[in-house]
Image 1 (cartoon, helix red, strand yellow):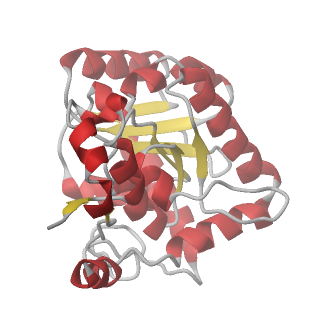
Image 2: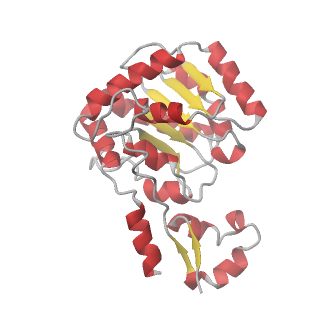
Amino acid sequence: DAVTTVSPAYAAEIMTPRYGEGLDGVLHQYAYKVRGILNGIDTEEFDPQTDPLIPRRYGPDDRQAGKAVCKKHLQTELGLAEDPHAPLAVMISRLVDQKGIELLVNILDRLVGEGIQLAIQGTGDPFYEWLLAEAANRHQGRIATVAAYDNALAHRIYAAGDLFLMPSLFEPCGLSQMIAMRYGTVPVVRETGGLRDTVQPYNRFTGTGNGFSFAGADAEELLASVLTACDVFRNAPAAWDGLVSAGMRADFTWDRSAALYAGL
């Protein structure tokens, strides 16, 4: 009767040879019954106003003070330099090709050279784990990596970050970018699947948007997007505050998704 997947953009992508895995022909034939409905997130577990796992709780109205405490705490915990003015880019991910890890490892040195700190949590491909550990050893105080699953630490990372990196090669929906926005951490994503549906790129002329995005599976495009985000963070505090506010106030509940499933 119907075919569903977990975002409108991915519903279109699976009807192409690149993403269809051989099923694109039949999916395209029955496109009239294919529907993409975004997942929601657990807004009770992931709520910075009530989260018992972060060092200071905060909401949309006191986010600056709350995130400052969480950032300083994580910098101390992970051995990063305690610098409130350094953009802290974070990532929580499986370390596999799909997640665009190769794009990130290719630009780590240049990110550090731009005064950016990185905190990365994840396990996966041993080669990527080694590359990240080696980068953290070379850039002590600037890069911290944790190759372990630790839910409490993940909550602290979401709360502490300024930027959340998600350069996925493909992403049917993605939950991490929505969780990050709920904690006031601005996403930098590749425009694919659910990332394209949930992250509206910042427009410096209108001040609209809730994050930053890039189109190609290319390390240079990722670097350019991160540097653009850091420029706004450092030099346009009012615009940055608008991005944070837009993300924290967005509706990523299952109520919205459930209504769409009920309608279908």
